[in-house]
Image (cartoon, rainbow, N blue to C red; front, side, top):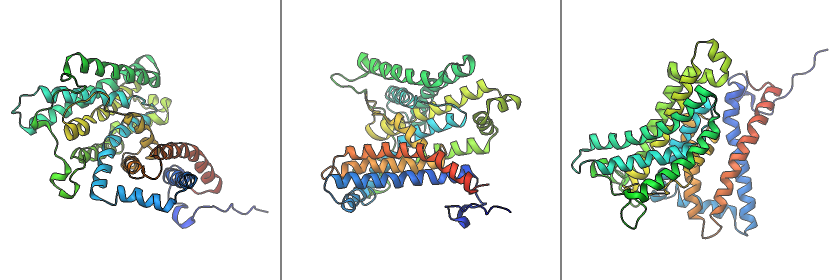
Length: 367
């Protein structure tokens, strides 16, 4: 006598037979993580004797409820998109890039140095690409080195990129204090006017006062290019094959060392473009210590975005909202609450991914 088919806990018309287990997991795991984070946030707010609804209202009012808040969310999401891509691209090749922080720092430093060294009258069609290109090149060098060492000698990219973070921070500090910085400051001279990116308030006056610049649209463009590179090119196919199985890649004639070097270099270049936001679009000079851990936050963005370039945009906007929202709710609850929520989201995504996939396979929820 045949056994009855197991009943799925998921809506059958929405999921069954339409998406693979991997695709369903990519959709459901972040949703579950956000639900867990909301529950944790409510409990923490209640512990402080405040109303969760009131605090949520303050957070939304200080972010998406005002033009200035929207601008600040976009500003804070811009570097997170870039560092998230720097983590996600190598992950698709089976590599874990922990070095986005260092890659962002050397890239921003290069942007600041080149932007300040250009002749004063350099036109923007020349100055902007040169300054941004210097950042991409420096980041690519910083990322490509561990990729080459991994592919050529089998060195572990996690250890290499962690160590290069410290080297990058020390190098940037040395360059800054040994002559690049203006007297009695920790920042370099201003970049030429032609290398500056316009604030979004120039086109949307309601955003006046926010630090958002056209670098945000540049980050969106980089995300779209990354999607095209991964899913519409031979190189992207080789990256994904390598990430699935080293043996399959070798058997298919794909050179692992070359792919590892290139994908890490491209990832480092993307992180190096952080200078377009912090240097070209915001302060208009390089400042030592500007990064504040955005490279490490890129890991969280990549996890929540499931290492998909388009998912990273949504994840970066969420973390940008939380970052700006922490300032909005600080009068009622500690802004560190937001940092706790970010950690909860990361842990929940990691913990839920395997469990969601297991349930889907057990219940026949995917093809």
